[in-house]
Length: 122
Length: 377
Image (cartoon, rainbow over all chains, first blue to last red):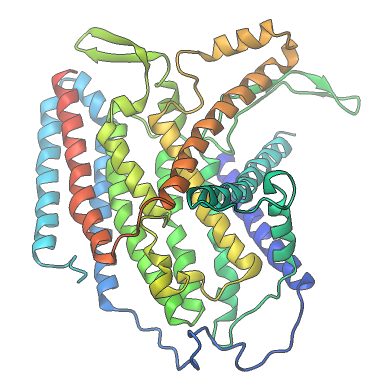
């Protein structure tokens, strides 16, 4: 419980710290007149044109694949921590083979994904 | 009183992280100058050290500028949010041994004794916690890129996000071997398991290698290499700094940012480097321990130097903390050294490396570790 309070306190403090920095900078900094050219977004010297926030679908695909594989890796973690306990209890072979089956499925998924060119960025 | 001590400690450790950043920037500028046969900042103060202060003052007096099309709230929010993941993750790392303050009187009142841990908060799942909160860094990058309403920012942010989440897989799976060896999520347990000389248990016999310390890297060499590469990609550092490829994307997700706002992104990036280096130290290089020297021996040495009993535990903790920071700075130096030595990858090469090489190698490392543990249990 104390750790939770410490974490919340740290988040609060960091937010205040950041806001303070920005506040001080905005008070001390010069306030110049705004021109249309100056406040347009950066464009390598050309007049900037309308901004579209379109995201290529490739990035969505990567994010979806990430979620699947990340969950699979999260499943490995408790197994890894409990592995030695199982070894001393004499269940070593059972838990090792169970994980080998899981990892075979994991690798099958990965190979399928690579073969289906989901990760081709050319 | 306990709450006050903890609050001061948390603030102190956070400010420590923030204060290391300008130092690192100075080291980076000097090192890059040295590597490229230039001088670097050497005019302001001795060795140019007060350049940091001059930079800070300059940043404070810059105009706060928001582009016309930008989403103003999110634009301001992103750099503030960028500070959080690094600060949270650094707080969970054990920096040194706990120290105790004996009973003392203050305002005619008895206080203490207190036992203070040299970290912001100790969690028994600290490794998972660090992985979790450092993954939150993606949000501030995406917010910054999207709120800037600039195509360079947007694409820099997208690239950064895709890269960070891809390498998070390699990062996560490379740590499974460490978890297999130490059977704990608690970083304090992992550090204290690395005491003494290298000892390998085969069956009931304990084989000792007297000239090597009992560090994690000797149990997990492949795991360390994978973790090392993945941390480079996670922090968006060279040779993986595709989000900031100047030739294509100007400056990546912080193209539209300037002054202190940009500086806060720098604090976040160097904070991530600091957390990565600290994790490498804790998991693979014995944390705050001096090789072959136990904590009791450090205390003994300090006693023989004539340190009073009241200060003993604090000075012991401070000594071990400086050892920890020395190890961390070695890794930070490698970060900087690599940046000015290696060329940048291409984006497809980067994604190929993460998904088709590091991830299967990490899985392989896990299986091999498990099988070796099974055979020599």
